[in-house]
Length: 341
Image (cartoon, rainbow, N blue to C red; front, top):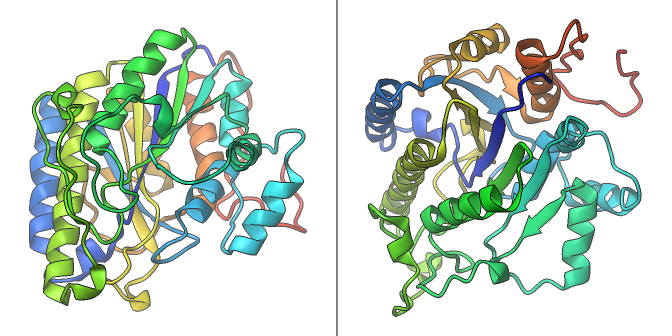
């Protein structure tokens, strides 16, 4: 690569295409997209969007982001564990590995306060091949935590992690994370603030919510509020930390549980946002359309196809000399089938 933009690969928890498909979500969701698209385009950002079929539905985020990064459909936990255990030594070809070969620093940011051993985290880290895992305990967050986990506000986590990594390395950055505040049951929920730094203040923990006590209308309201927060927060993040050398990839991991059904499909939105109009144009050949909203609700992509698609476009746009672009594998690497040279 002659040009090496910082790449922010941000999975948005429970961000599914059901938002288009249900009348109790669609008007507010599409109005939000229109508002945020105007905010971004007036600030010089180019936005394209497609729907992508996730390998999982209603949960199993790790299957979704691992399929995307490795370029292989992983749709059940035993398969995931088998691959994780197999690839502890040596790196499986992946989006992270391809960018590391180009000089990138691959950082995974996780704000989960999980009771996992250091050994377990080390297995996940080796499997994905990250250079650095930034865990909850390193962040120094002392404020209230919210919702599932519970977890710090995503607004604070993403801004803090960006500043930390920019101070730590001069290498181009592959910043990988998944948001937490839009995880079921979507309550209690943080508020978006003007200055993210003010969130790291000691305060009373909000009372947890028992999801079994919530009726369907309340669940729907909480879900829509969580998505509104995430998209506004991510728009703010892009404006705060992005520059001419940034690419933001916002991708839903799976449809939400409890407020969608399997016949709503398995697709999720994928937004790619940068200041490079030619990058946005190049993505159009693969089913991306301008703006934050789509009109065709048939998924044009699959999560496991994203790795090859993105590297093909990235090398085509920023590759040095006459580097041959890799083939696009819409279904990813399929075991037992040859991979094109």
